[in-house]
Image (cartoon, rainbow, N blue to C red; front, top):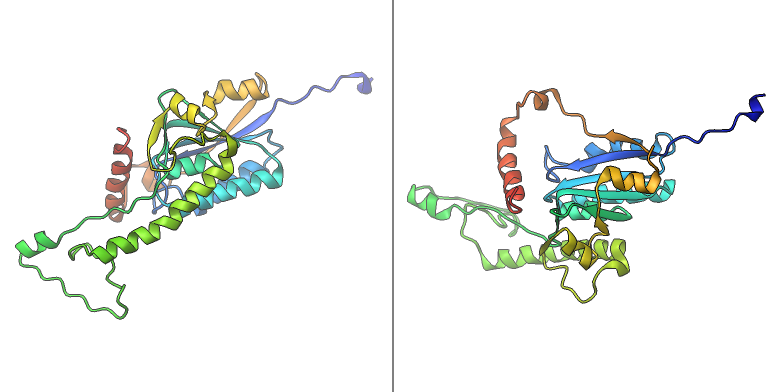
Length: 263
């Protein structure tokens, strides 16, 4: 009689990968730290799709590119669709990550964009002079003291920085165009590092619509879809709120990234 029992299809299974925080640095999102998690999400079981929950103000362009490339490689190898859901912000490198998905969904208040490249540092030459401190630099190679924060800014250093930024910016633009294609508003200036909110980003084709993780995935894969979270494990020190001394400055820089978007 067993052959008369109808087969009941299993609910669709969707791993949910959280990509939250600044990108790069010892405490930020990185390809090395995320690789096992991302690989496992695509390999475990037979996922109907993979969802990315993105909440990032950006950071390292290289790490953004590496993480996004890994997601795309696995999606194409496994033939698994990828959906991105933006929380507070997907800006700069955060938007680079979101574009690894086949479609991007935002909240009405989500901030999206900032397709640009920034180099930021501090300069201390006047403070040092007031304190009677003299900077002495001896290099082998004229560019070894390039952009030294303890020396006055040089016009040639600014030009060199811009020359370094241009190919990175172009790589970002190429990635967005390759992933978003004809959905982008061809008449809009999208690549000047501006940001947009919710429906504005939808209108420009930077994202596909306003939608939240659970209802959208239920709409796509049925009410019984099984969502399984995949997140990075925190170290024992992080769980107890203890940070290394050398992480203090990175914490300040990360707060500055979030602060640009009022967060």
